[in-house]
Amino acid sequence: MAGYFEEMGWRELADGEQPDHLLHMARFLVDFGLYEDNFSGEWPRLPPPAAKEAVENLPEVTLEEGSKDCPICLKKYNPGDKAKKMPCNHLFHSTCILTWLGKTNSCPFCRYELPTDHKGYEAFKKEKKRAEQRKEDLDTLHNSMFS
Image 1 (tube, rainbow, N blue to C red):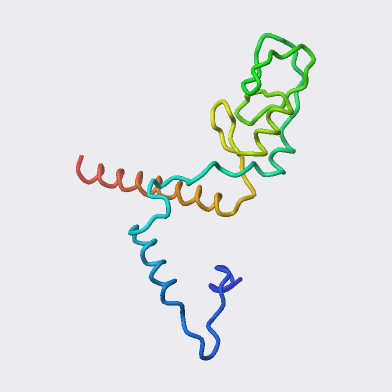
Image 2: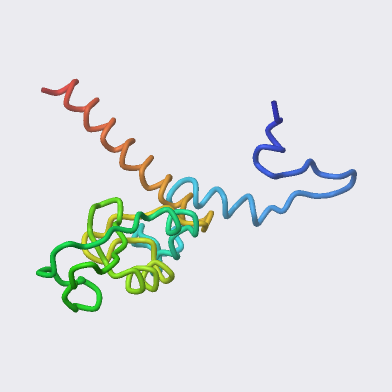
């Protein structure tokens, strides 16, 4: 089992080495919500591209009907065309969706998010989910006490 420093990717201070007090102050401000780098609580830019593995594992289907349009290029599907199927069950031309997922990780139709290879963005998503869960837990606690 790894120790605390190994888990966090840190190291102990060497003999005579002083801690970085500015780093401690910045951590304090972030931990207590006194500083956010983007003030809206959202990812500050377009989400990163989808993970290569997730894109490679998208199933390819052969279309039998030609009545629908590709939501990206707006061209009609022809019978027999190959299309990629997202986990949300939306269909797209292979070239359209591969180009799209090379820029961002979400379905262009419903915004279903695929995983990314960006560690910072994945950590942001986990923290956002934890914050939502904490708020839900507090609401449940409050309602159980005052209802």
